[in-house]
Image (cartoon, rainbow, N blue to C red; front, side, top):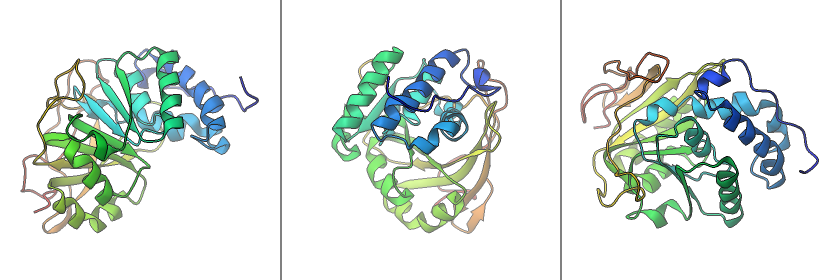
Length: 278
């Protein structure tokens, strides 16, 4: 072990957020505070806020992942990919990261945590197009939305979704990058709020649905890529951009056993409604 600041204790509610797998999440927090810092994957100033800013911030979207598989683009420190794999052992997760040192670190993390549902790929998103395909692609602190659309659209099955974790300027970024989303085949987009036990502020994602996709192959050999069944925990669409400007999401709440109740409210259908892009 290196000289470093220890990871903070898990906050109240974290056990519920990680569904009985808090021990793995705590081990991951320790790894982030240790080699995550020494390898330059997170800054030392992030250690005191690992749970609020990183682990809980990522696990908040776990129920929005459907049945997977998931491709996490630019996985870096395993945020959100490793966190999602911990919270959702039922879902296959593919970590796509181009830098050798980071992929070596990710391999060691996956091995240490015993995450059999994770595969690490050393590649850029463009390089795995055609060989990795999934209904959900995630990204956190990777690039602006228009670039993410260009990189991630080829990785999605028809009707698949890009779920990009963003900050408080998510609605502004969505409005500014609308043209880029249309260029790469997006048909619906909205800003969605996510919450989980132990998290004080909602997590914002930009959820982008794409009509087309390569629809070839599968994101891995163990799980056939397909459309997820939807989230199990509460989400609320905050705002979206449609053909006539910004609007609220439409849809129906739904859920399935295993979560803490609630559902999701996202725009339904393609090419119509307040969150349609055409």
